[in-house]
Length: 309
Image 1 (cartoon, helix red, strand yellow):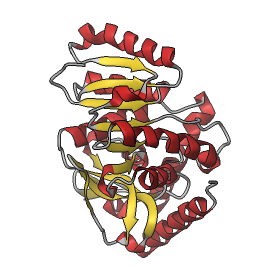
Image 2 (cartoon, one colour):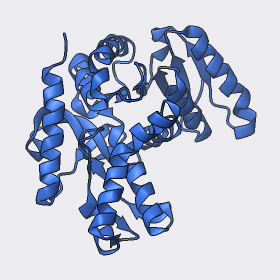
Image 3 (tube, helix red, strand yellow):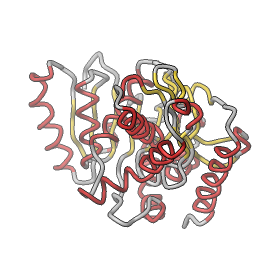
Image 4 (spheres, one colour):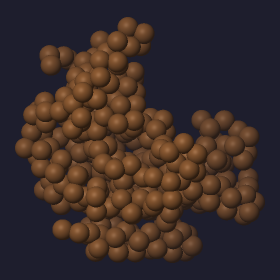
């Protein structure tokens, strides 16, 4: 695959993986190897995207394959493969099925792309990030999960809608589990530097927080799966890593004492750049926020403890 671009492998050519691949090509972030156990699906998606290249004026390469050795020399490997969440199913319900899938894929990543950064998208993403970190033996900075960046986009969208302002001017962060115990950081959310706590009532903020928490399930209930938002977020994170952008995001990563937690992967504010997690940012949190984060920690810890071998 001769090219001056960096190489990115996406494992899982389903709706999210393929849409993410297209976004990465469209934003000219790098070349793509799209791998799937259904090789024809990966090949078909790659061919479809390649035919779009003149329209998006990009000469990047994309290949579809079922062969893991094609990921050699990838700087970033993104795992989206796994069973999708169905209506009425929690992310935790998916855990044991997807843990087996992620473990088997990570073995291949270690074999063929041992120097890569590894981004986990497969749900439940915090637990899969933990599984991938343990299985890979990589430094913790190189293994991270996507969830909270997506939650943050949703949080920002609902704040903007409530205030009838541009989403572009809203800044916010979500940490904790990518799931029902997520923690939108109300005290750090702002519109052009103005704290939302001075713009919205307590009731309005509570409504926004609840909408943020249920937003993924709301989409799944309506159409079966989330696609565009997670796919866009994957591209944003790939851009942050491969271009060394040092973006500040809520990213799932393995903790070693930060926020008082250890031996767990959970979403925390971090600087995402060339080396993966460049730095974890420890913020002062309101007492109510701390309680929510502790609940989030307990939820994930219990799930990890019940992981099947």
